[in-house]
Length: 134
Image 1 (cartoon, one colour):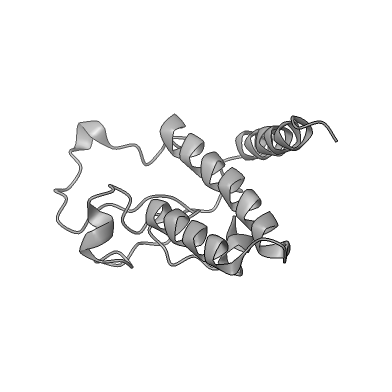
Image 2 (image 1 turned 45 degrees about the horizontal axis):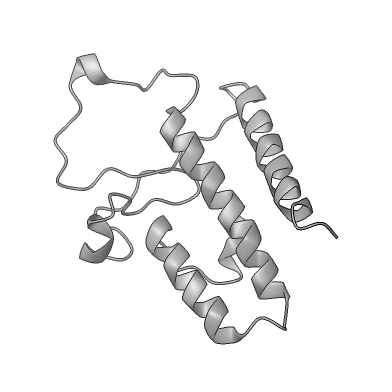
């Protein structure tokens, strides 16, 4: 198997996810539920700027001031490009981690370390089971 075939498969999957997400009408897209006041990892996740961020989207920190009327984006049909890119990157990383979880030849310590690193990015406690959310 050529070394680039898994990368091209991963890229193809990410493009399909992006195409499906952008083709979905706004009425069919689900709004993220309101996030709790504190992120799941507490102060450690606040420094990354993604406290409480999950696959559904990023939450505002509890101490953030209210959004001024001229800056409101509630009626936008699609999320910001950066949010879409972040979600696609999380999906691609989760797919790779799922492969690590399924392959018993990969050492458990390596998988745990990668899951912890991914959890710091997402702001969640990630396990092999939670990767199905992506």
